[in-house]
Structures are given as structure tokens and as C-alpha cells.
Image 1 (tube, rainbow, N blue to C red):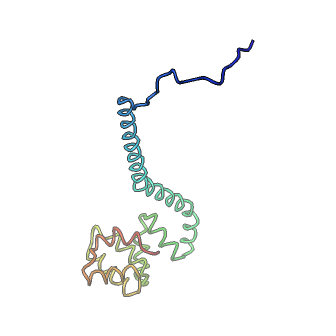
Image 2: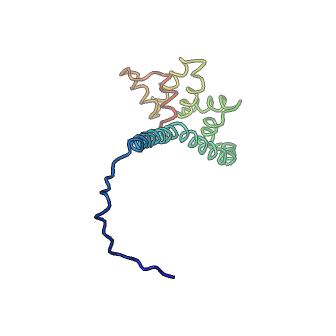
Image 3: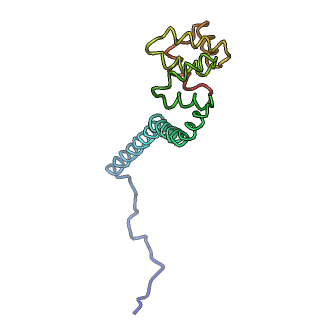
Length: 171
């Protein structure tokens, strides 16, 4: 059964409603806003940290996976005497034969082999390493030329070059 509904109510007899902020609720709202701002900074920090720390590790793992997939083919090519394959194996998979391989290529005047050999012997013989880099520069190896011109202007050290520029240079 329906009750009749009076849609014409008179509110004149009711007191006026004044909406005031509840100070306790305002304090909670401020805390919530502060927590949201802090949370945003934490998320931003995590994002920046992951790009600087995790992303390079992922890229390094991807590169290692690619090298592992290429290794069998490169070994076959190196056995056929292909110089780029021998250099690639010496750079990414050095073993007991690497030094002899590089020595043979250095005798032939291969500038890339000189650079790899310089990197390999740097820890034990810095003078030989520097000599090899200078010979590679004479042969026209761009990274070696960059290093030699950097030495002349005093911009770069051998350890900085071998640790940074050798890995960042064009192959």
C-alpha cells in the first residue's frame, strides 16, 4: 500500500544548516595529502633507481645472451681464419689461446687486436699497453687516436680510457 507523498514541504520551521569543517577531519585530510606526496616521491625514487641500477643489468644480461647465441657460429668462423670472428672471441670469450691469437694479429698490424691486447695487459704492463695503443693510433684505430689526442691535451688517463672508452667506443 502506497502512502501519499507530500512534495511541497515547508522548511521554514527547521533551523538553518551551517556546514563547518570538522577540525579533526581537516587534520586527517592534511595527513592524507602529505602521505600521498611522500608516496609519489618514493615511487619516483624507485623509478629513477631502477633505471640507473636494474636497467643496465638487464641490458648487460641481454647482451650476454646475444653473445652466447652467437658464440658457436663465431667459433666456426674463427676456425676458418676469419679475423673479425677471432677478435670477437678474444674480446667476449678470452681463454688460454687469446693472448697468442692477439699476438699473431698484432704482428700482422691489426689495430683492433692492438687495442684488445692493450686492454688485456694493462693490469700487468702499463708501458706495453700504452705502446700498443700508440701503435693502434698510427694504424688509424679511432679509439686509439682519440686517446692519444686526449693525452696530448691532458684530458684523459690510461685507466679511464681502458675502463670507459674502450667499452663505449665504436667497434
